[in-house]
Length: 272
Image 1 (cartoon, rainbow, N blue to C red):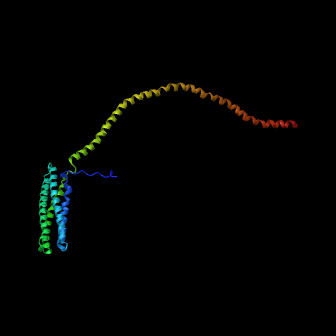
Image 2 (cartoon, rainbow, N blue to C red):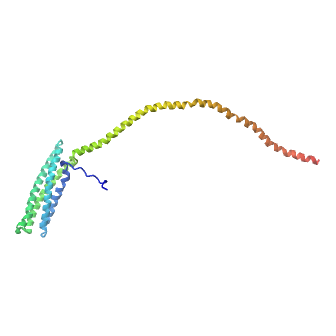
Image 3 (cartoon, rainbow, N blue to C red):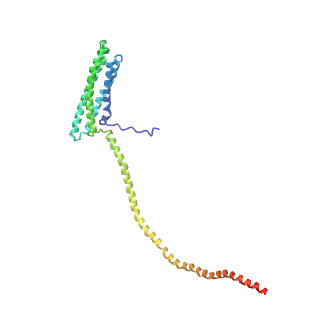
């Protein structure tokens, strides 16, 4: 039942994890702004929306740290590249994303204070504190999102413009898969070589068999020549007999034609 299930892909090395983890923090941090807006305009559920925004900020910031660390590991893979323009874009991308990571870490701590302070002081409960606090925080959050989007755009240029790629499989597994692909080809070549040798070895035997077969075909020729004269008299003998028998057949056919005249003469003779 489970034999037909596809096998799991190989676990990529640390430098290959960057394409897998980089998109999650971007989505979480952008979506956190929606809950900040809801916390401003919905008084009854404002605090719960703030908690939801804080959870997204914590998850997005943690993902940003992971994305930056894997991005630095992926940079070490392409250290041998000689394209100066690509290196300028990569360095700018790294600097911008490190700044965005630090800004989001600071904003997460600030928003955690915005969520916790109303629980500690009743005077800070309600829209009198929540609305202006969330409004200021939303402006700072949108600025951080713009910084993150600019850095992500540079990362897209590295991939689609300069062709920078990460290793998605460990080197050992990649080498093993390469050797597995080469092994069948080598085995096919080894099997093909004995087949060619067998053909070459069989060629002289075939050449030796051909003269023997030709000799066997030439031997019956004299016997056929000897039998030919013996058969000729047999075929010629019936010809004279057929010619000799033909006149009696004609005579038999002519005899009845003369009978009517003779009978008529015989009948007339007694009347006289």
